[in-house]
Length: 203
Image 1 (cartoon, rainbow, N blue to C red):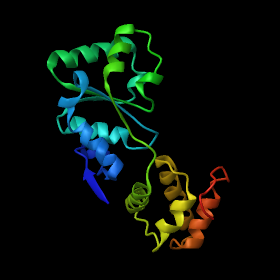
Image 2: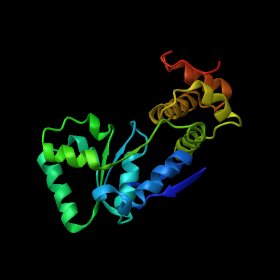
Image 3: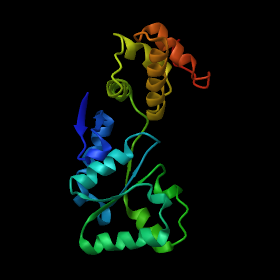
Image 4: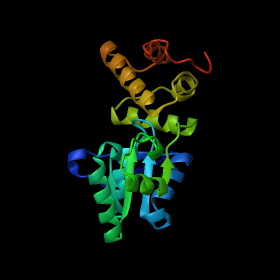
């Protein structure tokens, strides 16, 4: 599983993005702002899916300007920044948990511009990405997962970026509380803390 480093300041610490085939397609589209309508794209995806990291990568590599949580920015300010980017010939990447069609936009001119922008969506993580996220989150915590951990966990976890991150945090906490290495038994206990809200594909 490949990762790309992020050009972030020291304040953010070392960060990277885990790439799968699906995210590679997203990255490829973000890397070609000259192909975007009016040099504008909207990056949408679920929480903790790497949108903000990709936005920082985009801005840090000099490809253009990125606005995180763009759907929360006052409409007049967003319209002004769109016009400014157009006037300066810069690409503009707008980041949100939702596609622009789901935003509540009152300004007709802004709505039409958002509607014309390229929509780049991050979908639910596939098995390849889930496995990579498990490894990456564990590595950042200095947590050693046993052989077969991914094969055991993948059919049993909620298929979302946030759920994987939360699961690794639970595994880490249980390992520290018990002062014990991670085992399949510990993984089973961490899964049990999900509260039964997720229906696994296989038990």
